[in-house]
Amino acid sequence: MSKLTEGKDPIAALQLLAEQFAGEIVFSTSFGWEDQVITHMIFANNIPIKVFTLETGRLFPETYYVWNRTMEIYGKPVHAYFPEHHLLENMVNAKGPNSFYESVENRKECCGIRKIEPLKRALAGNQCWITGIRAEQSANRQFMSDVEWDEGNQLIKFHPIYHWTLDEVKAYIKQYNIPYNTLHDRGFPSIGCAPCTRAVQPGEDFRAGRWWWEDQSKKECGLHAVQLNDLKE
Image (cartoon, rainbow, N blue to C red):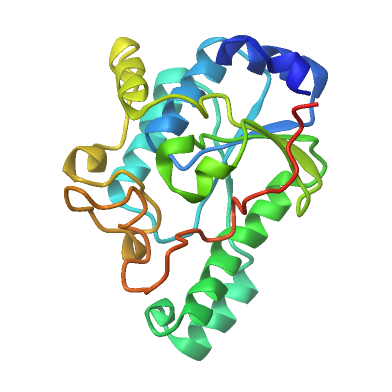
């Protein structure tokens, strides 16, 4: 796998992977800076990669705006995956709409229903998953690789802009006039569900705004668990 992408720019790498895994390659977007860059690469170059998002039901209004604007500009679909309604109903009926504030266990349950289970459905039947992960986003992600084997989902993951800096991402967005979430301009480097995301203060970690009420060092919901196996060979 790495031999296909090594030395290639992101667009060339995506085109090669789309050929290698025809009909079995997807890209997950949450409409952040990085994801908008990759969406532009895919849509503007007509690369046959399915783009999908997880519609948790708790997104910011600004996120919905970017979602809609992206579809208007490129004229291509962004496929939505929703939580299983009976799981969501059972959780909310039993614990209320904001149970995730009460314990880490409750928060992980909410993430599991709203994000992990829909992601499993979105990835089912595919061989390659494209993401917008970058190394400098968090300490955890610095130990990842641009090409990985995802044991939990049994597929290859490729992060085409893994080695890009945030300045490079922002410059690319400006160069191609790509729509982006205006929350980024208000101190939100990482944007997830509205109740679980806040702006970060100068000097704070990139992920400090996610689940800020929890006293823990790892700010991940489980979508991108650090993999021990890469595919460099």
